[in-house]
Structures are given as C-alpha cells and as structure tokens.
Length: 341
Image (cartoon, rainbow, N blue to C red):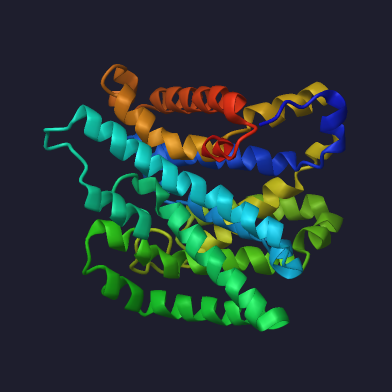
C-alpha cells in the first residue's frame, strides 16, 4: 500500500479488526492449500470448517452495497478493474512463462486452457475461480441495481433463498458433479457463493454494525461463543456440495465478520502500533494470487514447504508478502498495482 505517515494515518478511517481478519483468513487459505496434518483438531475441526473464502465474500459485498445504492459509475469501473486486471494478467503470465520453460514438454499449457481460464476462472491458475465468481456476481448485481432500482436487494434475497433450495435439494450438486473439476469447482460454486454475497449486502443494508456497536461487548462475547459452537458441534445437517454450501459457512463467516469489525482497536492511541497493523495486514489479495505459485517453486528447495508443515506455510506467506510489497512499491502509480494489493 501507499506509504502512510502519522498524520495521514490518523485521517484515514480504517477498521483494524477487519484488516487483521483479512490477514488471518489469507493465511487460512495458505494453510488449506499448503498444510498437511494428521492432528485431529487441526485437520477435522479447524480445517474442516472452511470459513476463510466465505468470509472474504461477505466482506467484499458488505462494502459493495453503498456502491450499488448510489450507482457511482467511477466506483463501478474501479471495482471491475481491480477484479479484471489480475484475472486476465496472471493467467497470461503463467501461460507464457510455462510455455517458455516447457515448450516441448508434457507440462506445456495449451492455448485452449488459457481460453478456458478466461471463461470460467480455472484451467491455468485455479485460485482465480474466486474472481470468476466475484466478477460474475458483481456484474449481475450492477445490472439488477440499475434495472430494478430500489427493489434489487429484495430480488437478490429471493434468489439467495432459491440458491439454498438448490443446494439442499442437491439440484446444484447433481447437475455440476457430472462435469470435470474446472467446471464444478468454479461455475458449480456460483449457487453456493451467491447467498454469501447477498448476506454481505443485507448486513450492510440494515446497518448491522451501527446497531451492534451499542452492545459491543455482548456482541463480541456471543460471536465468540457461537463460533466455538460451530467448530465444536455439528449443528447443521450435511449437504452435498463443492465446498461453500450450506448455512454453517454463512453463519460462521458472519460471526467472524462481526467479531473482528467490533474489536475496539480504534481506541489504540499509539500511532506506530496502528501503522504496524496497517503494514503487516497489507497485500492479502496479492498473497492469495501468488501463494500456489510460490509453493510450487519453493517446494523443490525447502523441505518444510515440501512436507507441508505449519512453518512452511509461514515461509510461503512471508515470501508472498515480500514479493507483493516490493512489486507494489515499484508500480503503485499504475493499474498493475492491483496484481499485488
């Protein structure tokens, strides 16, 4: 991010709790992909509850609501640029570099895989299924907000209910499970991620944080208790899906969002502490884009990463952060900065 001096930091309204949440969820993503353990608590309880991606979706669409309501064209263009630039450039770079290295090899990535990547978000760089979902749902929401004006949110809420019906009836699973992984773990996610996006909009529309902040300590306490219950007990029935299905992930992600949003970190008076939080929690998007690439490169040289250890995940996170920090500083005045933010 841009350099913040003490005065500019104090003038910038930042929710430090959410910044920390983004950082933790970003590390959770790395752990999900690059960590392997037989420890029951970590494997079955912690990583058996994949709240990381749903939390990012809720955060993203919580802050989109105002944009949808005021219909600011410049902000609409800016959001789409932030999503589309990494969505397009990362696959092209990976495809080009890969084919330079493996020109006459079985590891060569064919052009049709690049086209498939652009269409559904998988084929070259699989983590961009997330951006495919964000882009598709965002464009849909922009269209509906302009078309149906003040009724668009109600329509989305009805569609979210229909999405849950499709999940619980196994319609979505049975339909997409016939296809290969590229399709079912991208397009198949849409019915599962759409209700999460609508939840983010709905929370913002009812000013949930403004209401809960009047009961901050109680809200934090009950959020912690209910998160513990979700981890400890199976209070929701299992339904078939591709990883983002059901009400548990929606509820758990909302609780994480509320818990960290309400943390009273704005009361910190020491500006250097705020500056430190700001810097160490930067570049979560860039870390998400790079972590699989860094893993594939470093596993050939670092045993801790090859064996998928906790420390190996920390190393991946730190290296991804440093790459993003250095690259961002060099191109922060161009739109390519969205590759490393």
